[in-house]
Amino acid sequence: MRRRAIEAAECVSLICADTEAIRAAARAAYARKLREVEALDATIRKFQERDDPAFGAWVRTLFADEFSKMRALQNRIERLRASMLDAYELAEERDCPLESVWRDPDDPALSDVPPARAGRSGDGAPDMEDGPDGDDPGPGFGTWIDWPDLEGFEDQKSECAKLYRTLVRKLHPDHHGSMDEARTELWHRLQAAYRDRDLDGLEECRLACEGLEAGAPTVRVSLLRDLLLAATRQVSILRRTINRLKREIAWGFTDLANRDRLATRFRRDLERDRVTMTAELRALEMEADALREARSRRIRRRRTRRRAPASPIDFKQGELF
Image (tube, rainbow, N blue to C red; front, side, top):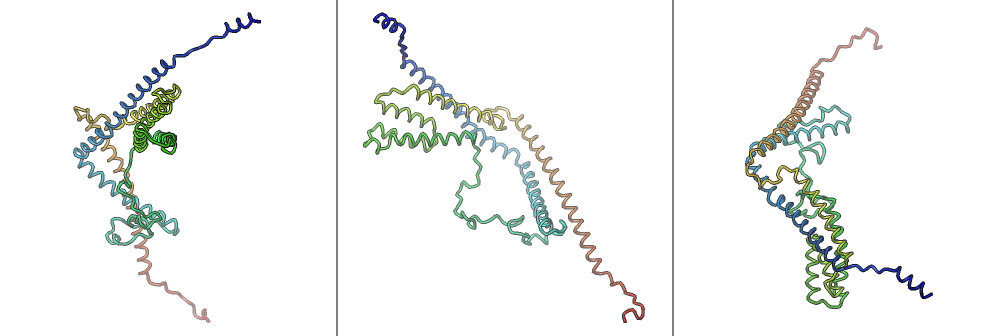
């Protein structure tokens, strides 16, 4: 019996892992990934804060005349298009010829005539205070925010909120009864990271919180693994964003020493847009001319019918009696 116990004991091996070495390797990998995140984020900020604004100022200065002509074309197209849309809708509703309800935007006699229906072309924009939500929309209303990766941003926002709630429950004074200096400093860091939607900052707060709970600066290897995975996802999002931004014409603008090729490319793009808009305007003008001609024919027929004398009726004697 004793021999069997000894044999069984010899078959059992104890596997000991050097958790400190694993933890150190995980910390180093996480630190490298965070540095990569910072570098990618700095590249994106350079484009948003330097390249794009500088490119916009350069374009507005160099191509001011071209933009003025393009705006005139666009305004003309919008006026004709709006008048056509009004006419098509009214003709369908009233079951009448299109030319009878079309308002010629070039007719000075109709410049002060209100549109047939409220909210159509020529009618001013609706008053914001007339709607159900009549509060002042604020100075940022109507501005476009070009989020680098909207889907990734929404995921990160949700993850930030979830992590923030978890850490607040751990650090709140009601949970510990008192706040020492370390917890107070960590509490302020947590609030700032959540206000800035800084997922990396929240993850660092999570690391510090784990250390406070353990009473030592040690952190679980599983937590470091989770942080490394989160940082890897963030790197993937930032790389996709950079790949998309690299297709923008303003990418790397501040680093260009010779901008002649860029000016040629941009001028070619403007010319292509101008040709497209000119073709659209020509089609709208032809449709407007056809409606003017059809309206003129209707007016001429109406006037002819009014001037024509009544046809005599030849009654034979005795037919009425």
